Length: 362
Image 1 (cartoon, rainbow, N blue to C red):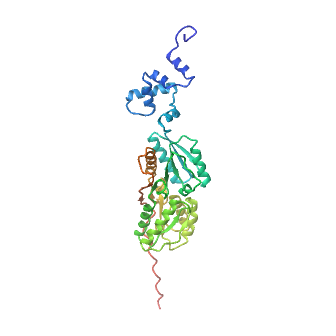
Image 2: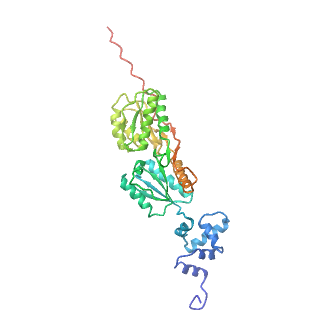
Image 3: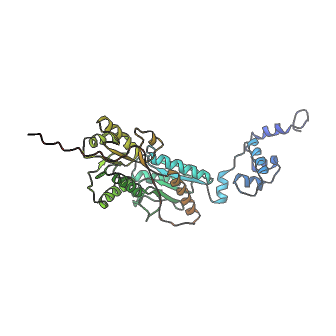
């Protein structure tokens, strides 16, 4: 008997008592009135189950507090349905928005994301990150970092783990997904030249950054192709503060009428420096950024910039790593995501040259 009085316990009472132990797939099947195979199909998101039955199974799972056994499922399928992401920094716009896009795209495909931050960009830290991967249940890895650290002989990729690299020039070594940095830079520089500026100054990103280097190389090449003088490079570190410091130097140069900043944050600091030094934007100096962060349209003036499609980068990263897992794609090579120039109010034709003073009358 189920009670002291000999009266069978009610179904809700049996369910509450069932919560004292871990619910099994068989428990869910009994409560939902379906087979264990149907419960398995619902748990794994497979087709072939009517919506009514699926809702019935989900309700039973909730009632019993059932959670699918991911470890057992991984042993059976050979997949953990988890993608590891290794990155250096979450302080830059590019890394944060790329990571967000990867997580969104992975979830859409039924995968979770495990983040492995690397505190310092050294070979030991990178090696440690990959070592930790061997202890985690991940099927593949997306790496957002400077790829030269992966070239070191001391760094060993875990066996059977597929790797895709974001933002690098290592297309001959890895599968790479990247923004078309050079194409975006050419569009920015040509826009300023087409407005009539004699040349374009460049506020570049930090040394050691592949993205910064590609933008700098494309800036130089575009000016050379147009037969224009290449001004000295002014460098920042991606931050608005570094853009402000560099901007104080640029503002003092009367010959500087156009600046291409390697990202929007540095462009923001540059705008402040120009304002403080009495150089109007765009009447005296035109400014273009790179990234098209959500706030770019709210700068004063609204910033002309190069738009990066971070959502597409994330989607292609996940797509590439899943194709590698399924052995349905190239092992190496680079996929470039196009950029586009977003023209706002921070660029205009250069100021007219000052008229020469007339000679005094005799």
